[in-house]
Length: 337
Image (tube, rainbow, N blue to C red; front, side):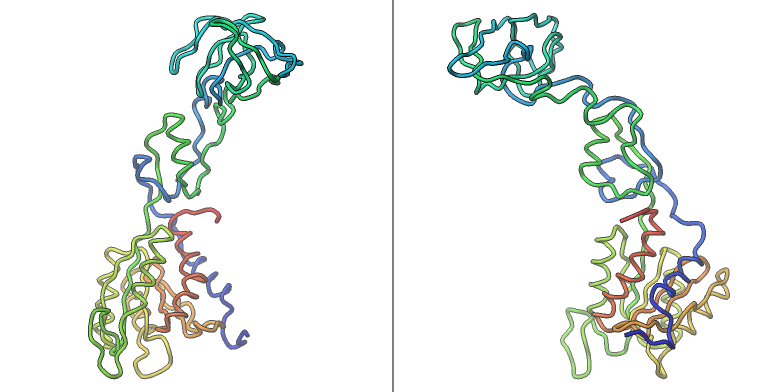
């Protein structure tokens, strides 16, 4: 249920996205093997056809399909085997009518042939003749020249998250380095007098840190670099110093805890205070019509997004899906999911 006294989540997100300028992040040139799940900075067109030749998808015989028409086990067709095609070798001969050539899977189709007959549908009559036990159609069992990618065709669009098959396609057309957007570095600042490290024994009233682990995993999964800054007590100067230090190495700052109403609610004040000495910004909203996640804070310091997240682990996940992921998309240059 929405609370009319608070912004709708989409409106709150819009305030932050509209306030950010100069993104995506800068580009960097990387080898393609380092670009899995990275975001492309530009359209990439193929400079060649793939495959560069018509090849067989089966072990068998390169034939002229017309020589096989009407063939069946009870009335086979007969063709002479004149040649053998070797892998990686360009055939220096032509297949004439009534002739065939042995061909392996991936072998280059010779001139004069327009299909490949599977080995299972051929039977040796002699060393240089086979029976054809079933017909093949023109183009059957072949990958045609340029069938996968044509020269000048768009291979990768700008803002695309690169998948393993995309990297394989780039390798196939000889592209080994590309430009991708820098991965966003995101600081995680955990606050709360009651929060202790995950490996600490608990005393009454304490809880172990959960949110930094959850956020780090979510950030990594979405293509960012999490920077876990530690657990900080609910003291104004302590939290302020942690945020200021994070400004030097972060593209976004997340603060968990300290966002609900109360005497220790300092996050909004700190964001406003620091923004005055970092090029402007400040709190854009404090509270959204969302449950869990209602006391969330959103703002900027300079041109960097800063979000104050509730301490409840479920609220952190909800806020990540609704706010942090879309902001990461803008920072990293992702066009569409």
